[in-house]
Amino acid sequence: MRPTVHDIAAKAGVSLATVDRVLNDRPGVRAVTRAKVEAAIAALGYVRDVAAANLAKSRVYPLVFILPEGDNPFMRGLEAEVRRAGLHSAAERTRLSVTTVPAFDGAALVGAIDAAIAGGVAGIAAVAVDAPEVSAAIARVQEAGIPFVTLVSDLAGSGRDHFVGVDNIAAGRTAGSLMGRFLGARPGPVAVLAGSMRVRDHGERLEGFLAAMSAMPQARAVLPVLEGQDDPGRSHALIADCLANVPDLAGIYSLGAGNRGLIEALSAGGRGDLCVIVHELTAETRAALQEGLIDVVLNQDAGHEVRSAIRVLRAKADGLPVNAGQERIRLDIFIKDNLPAGPDEEN
Image 1 (cartoon, helix red, strand yellow):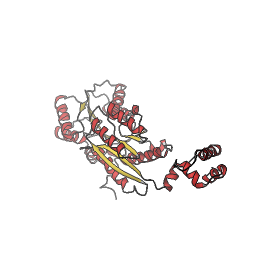
Image 2: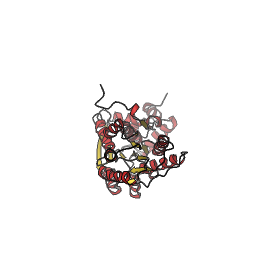
Image 3: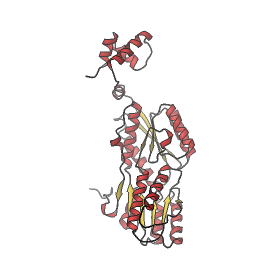
Image 4: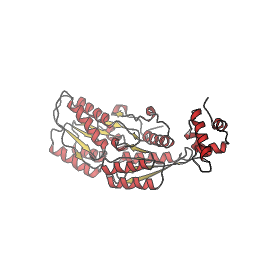
């Protein structure tokens, strides 16, 4: 049977109020009395249930999500999921807020992180930019005793507490393996459209993709990465130029969020028999998959990621372990034949 505060009080010969003051590190307890209580705690092997204590005190967790702004359907989907979770936040003793910063802007992300520290939040979840100043800001979060979760794009060497997202190297390998299998012996190079190589998820996806493509029986050139900054107009121009100037192009792998521009370029320029693989199931990629403009969508569940980040931040704030199995984010592979019903198609 687990020892209780009553057992501590009896062993130390003090009142329950005194035990409560010691456990919560409040003043009003003499040093000798505090030492007796601490000795009783150690002797009994008492482990405090921090989550239960916080529930009893009705503690509320202010959590902030820092997301890229702009025309990125997946990020806007993440933001919508945070706001949806916020509708139930009172019952779950959380207070959720969203801060948006320019995409791929390390300085802006640092400013938002420092503002969150100053605001006394209980936890921060952010889409990381791979930059030294961002790692330094995460170190300041640690010094302040605030849990920090990287979301979608990791920064493993920064000392963050947890990463919530898919294994991006494995996602890239999956894309490369599918690309190789779909193309078979057909000759021709493959183009890669990224947002920015300043975010680690794009770099890791490219790493996995190149590794898988190099292992294919059919040797195939991969063209230099096109960085569209996740901007539809820029992505459209880059892909339209590629289609016009690489007549033997065999495939396109879009590892970022410039898919609206990609789809518009494919629709205007004629897809031919290209193999096109993209990330994230949005209204636009769903329609393009149904129309045959793209072949495969690799997807991560934005709702699961937001819920996972909230659970991890609360567990870290309470000093509790994280259930790794529950927080593992699955990579889904969709083709036209297994496409789930969309919001407008459900009964």
